[in-house]
Length: 236
Image (cartoon, rainbow, N blue to C red; front, side):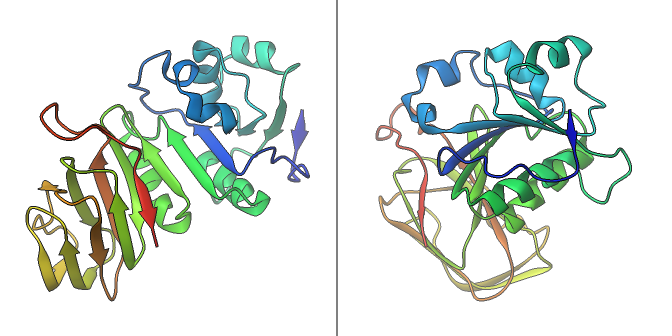
C-alpha cells in the first residue's frame, strides 16, 4: 500500500467519477446502464470503496486514511487497484485530498456520488468544495449540484426546478434570465430564500452576477409533463 506522493500519471480519460462515503440513492445499476460513464475513470475516497464493491466497480485508486473502509473491501480491491493511505491527522478531508489530486492530474469533468446524507458537517463541506473545484458536480438521484461561474448559460433543463444557493456572505448584481421568476441586478445575502425553488423555462437560461459565489441545485429529471431531460450543461 502506498502513502505520501501522488502516482504519476493516472488519467486515462478527462472525466472522473468519485465515490464518497455518504448516502448513495441512485439505482444499483446506474453506472452499468449508463453509456456515459463508460468514458469515466473511477476513484474512491476511503469508505467510498465499500460502495464501489457493492456496485461491482473496480476503481483506479482508493485514497484516504482508511478508517471507513471495511477489511473485506480492502482485501477484495488491494490486488485490483492502487491505494494511497493518508494520515488520520491531516489538514484536509479524504474527499478534498482526492479532488486535489484529480485536479492536478488535469481532469476537466468530475462527477461526485454519495457526497450528501450521513453527517451534516461532511455534507456541508462537500458542497462547499464545489467552489474550489468548479469542474466538479455532486449527483444524487433527484438533483445535480454545481458551482455557477459569474456568467453561465444552462441548457437542457427546461421544466426542471432549480435553486441558487449563496455560499458567500453576499451575492451582488444577480440576474436570472429564462426562469419562471427572473431577476435583474439583485443582491442576496447568504441564507436568503429568494432564489429557492425557481423553474427553468428556457432552453438557454442564463445566470449572471458580479460578486460572490453561487451553487446551482437543479433537478436531474424534469417533471413528466415537461420536455424530456437532458444532462445539465453549463456554458461559461
